[in-house]
Amino acid sequence: MHDSMCPKFDKAMQLISKRWTGLIIHQLLNGPKRFCNIESAMPISGRLLSERLKELEQERIVRRDVYPETPVRIEYSLTGKGLALGPLFKELEHWSHEWIELDEADFPEAIVAEDRV
Image (cartoon, rainbow, N blue to C red; front, side, top):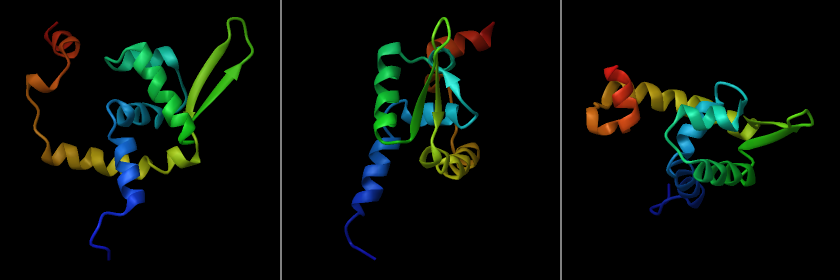
């Protein structure tokens, strides 16, 4: 065992813990999605979502498929590398249900307002 942190683990944590990245991966674990479906599922700007998806493509975690239809259809899905994160995310989800407590401050305004309707 090394006294210093493993560089690969550190890089993985930096990638997955980047704002919105984990939630994007979590969305895609349910299957391929179009940009607008991902964007509407979370309070993220289109510009930032596009940036995160490009980063995930560069890391070969997400795949972008373009279908030559009218209008053009683009879908995002997880690669084998991305799907390999599934068990990790499932465990993190179980852990969060057991150990994390939320209050109203933890929710984006739109979600809280939606719950009040």
